[in-house]
Image (cartoon, rainbow, N blue to C red; front, side, top):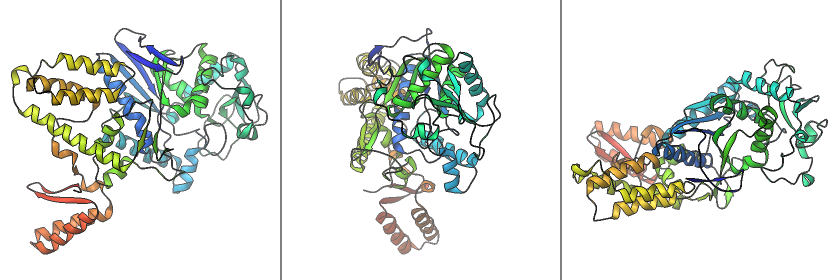
Length: 467
């Protein structure tokens, strides 16, 4: 198995630290607002990575952080704490904002069939670990004090610029100096902030009452759960020049070595070539897709048609094509399963399984793995029982629920759609119970005008994507 390692800038053979065991840490969300499908692009790919490692019989411990304090509106030390910004926007406490958007994030994971990480750890629940790590960095001589707080001295780490290949001579002072003019270098970063008494989240520390900087949490929590050295660290490419560079620096300050052996970074999901973002107003949540009549696993399928390092340009046309392709794949898979031939069911198709594993072993090449699945489905010469066994194994990695019922792709929970469509469904159900069929037909047409179709079954109304 080979993975593209940002640390070395080439494909490296994957050699786990411990026989049969792998530790994976993924940078998780800052929970001040909804997580959109651009964020979920990364988590689907990291889910496939973890599923594939387990497919290969590794025991995997997957850890992901939740940032609920300390992340400024820039990725540096400048601006307002994102959590406080979210609280002001919604007129509630920072704790309420965190709980609301952690819920939205977990719901998005479940809708996309992303396995929940083994450890989902909140920064605010690991303040002691962050203070302990800063004390260790300080004891090793890698910090200094300013009026703002305690700062990491990057001059003590000669390799600071190497990971992101930074040209420090061209680095401009920018906001990081403006917020703390006492910094020795503009790229020195805050570990603990003490000069913001009005900040809504504060803890006692050896340096005064305050709160942690953003970067320290990931090193503190990854090493708490995975040890001072672990196998794989994942994140978006935007983390390379600041967040992960600072993680590597502070780990050197604490432990004298890098924490992760393999650093994997995903490209972005874009819209019309631009990164999906709240500021541009071009973002959609998984819940938005459901409101428009799409099964979220159509998005998962679409994401898997791209390699994590190539990114994906999202459009409604591509999502519709993915929905159609997934429906065909599901129907074909279920037809194969229904064909019988139980005597070969546990055997599988060795050649296809080797090709599938080989595709994913080459830097998690999910498009190539999907192509192998289609080749298997369309091969007329294999017994259906063996094909079924292999398809079920493949789906344990791809997570597309191929055997869960073809109709499930098109049926949507009426509680997840817009209020207007939900009200029309309720009114139509009332009309049907009153045997007012002309009114029920009129309400059906209104629902169809919203982009759906409704079917009457023994289980009641079923809402489906429009024809």
